[in-house]
Length: 194
Image (cartoon, rainbow, N blue to C red; front, top):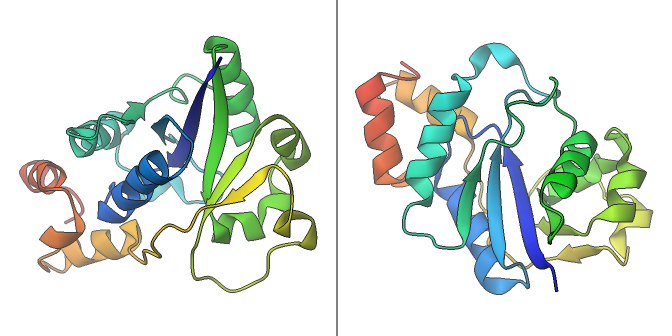
């Protein structure tokens, strides 16, 4: 039987405790056997100019995942054409790892706009989607409220954003509690976001 692996995509610019709480919750309180934190080189919905280089963000994800046996960093999108679209990544990753059943992990805010994603119907036809709660305006489309391939997971509601962390670092605020200690040390040593 195939392993059920959750894919948690993000620019992780930087990865923070909110990401870790959600990823770990999915690993421990759902039927997903492993969570891959997929570092996205360029999210088509975000400005690229504010992104740290791929290898720095991947390094922070590696550091953050230490000690979490079910969380695995992934750079699978680094060699794919950019901007990356989830549907293309899913096809590539399924072909590369055929003994895994890949599921998509997303916040409820993304589910609200999922119908706008490139080939969203192909994604939901071929992959389960695990949704964690997020506070955001808008409504989830009726077709997704009770869809058989969408599982809502009662994860904690985490309202920490990488944007807030970057801004706080620039303003010399102490954001230590929002980051894994190893990630904060790396950011500080590299003088990022200042």
